[in-house]
Length: 102
Image (cartoon, rainbow, N blue to C red; front, side):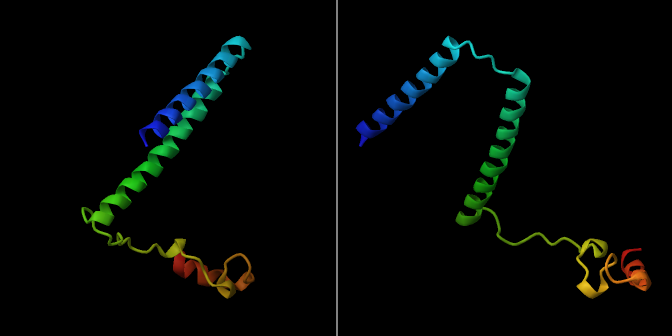
């Protein structure tokens, strides 16, 4: 079993070495600004994903409760029914929207 891990480690190191050698030999210039922007966006996404996995693991073993957070409803942000939609219900229906959102 340990042989498989050593083989995978060696294969990964060989691939990484080959990529590094090709980048150095081909004199490919990386645009630093784009590289840093992409890598920081990737790190941000990974941080959110890993934090979510950590919270889920703590909920699974019982360290954190699984109860949802109760947030008071915001009346103006809720979707309106189709017949009461402010944009498509006609010129006289705006009073209905004002009483809910103002």
